Amino acid sequence: MNTIFFSLLTVASLFIFMNLGKVRASKKQTDRDDRINRFGSKRQVHQNRDGSKIIEGEAEEIKNEDQK
Amino acid sequence: MSKHSALNTFGRSGNPAFTKNFTNTDTSSLPLAERMTLDGAVNKTAILLGLCFSGAFLGWNMPILVIPGAIIGFILAMVTIFRSPSKAGATAPFYALFQGMALGGITMFAEMQYPGIGIQAIGLTFGILASLLFCYKSGIIKPTENFKLMIVSATMGIMFLYLISFIMSFFGPGIGFIHSNGLFGIGFSLFVVAIAALNLVLDFDFIEEGAEKGMPKYMEWYGAFSLMVTLVWLYMEILRLLMKIRSR
Image 1 (cartoon, helix red, strand yellow):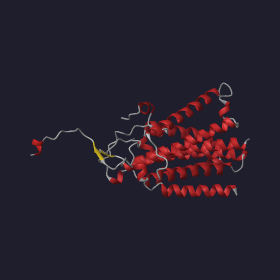
Image 2 (spheres, rainbow over the protein chains, first blue to last red; image 1 turned 180 degrees about the vertical axis):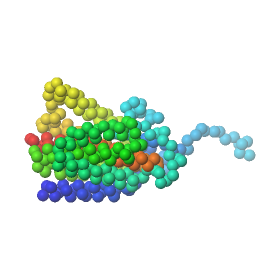
Image 3 (cartoon, chains in turn purple, brown; image 1 turned 30 degrees about the vertical axis):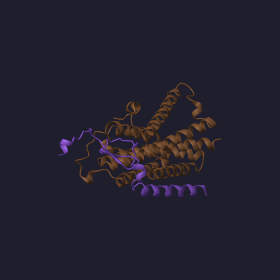
Image 4 (cartoon, rainbow over the protein chains, first blue to last red; image 1 turned 135 degrees about the vertical axis):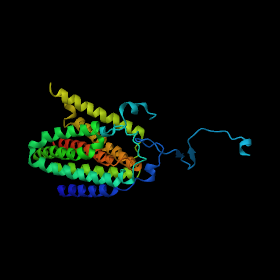
């Protein structure tokens, strides 16, 4: 009985691994600011929790004369 | 550059296979067919698991292969980690085969003392693998820099303790209480199993991020190899824990 239970557990777990492993992780997992960054970030635009976006770069004052 | 100075000092993962720095890898010029994918990493893990089981079959029937298997497996792991991660496709299959031989023989000796313990350890190892994969994919467990720092510290601490115990065993009984079947010994084993299991989460995250950022194809083998290293460690610790419990 013991052997059957653990054998079934092994087969089921391997089946889950083979199928679930090929599925991409949920947005909850991938879209986080505190994610581990091993390979260097390619993203320049970060999203806040409220959905607004921050674009990295230097701030530049816009004068009325420039707009004309 | 991480804002956590300790991570920069001690490396970026609990698993030694992940302490290698890949941040300078340029992937922008790689064609799609030469980029790492989740499918590729999972399939390669399955190949390594198959080779490990084949090695275990040999080790079970020829227990004389335990020590050569363990030594050659260890050397191949060191070569893969420190010398040529890009050659993981050549070294990882042999690592899995030789480690399998060692595990097969060790399991056979454990089975002689405690019948049925092998399948229990295998079932628990893969059960933990599947449940943690689900927790990772669904976002229940979220690996962060602090999480990694915690796992790195604990893993290094355990390795250091094992090393001291091994050296001390040449001169006397070693650190006996961590190998005992008392409450402390079992508690220690439970802690080590938990740390080994949490290393799996870092492995999943490594593979997920590598596939997401389109790292080179050889990283599929490297990711699969890293997962195998953690699985072998987890299996050994579960076997030790079960032996301690059964010997009471």
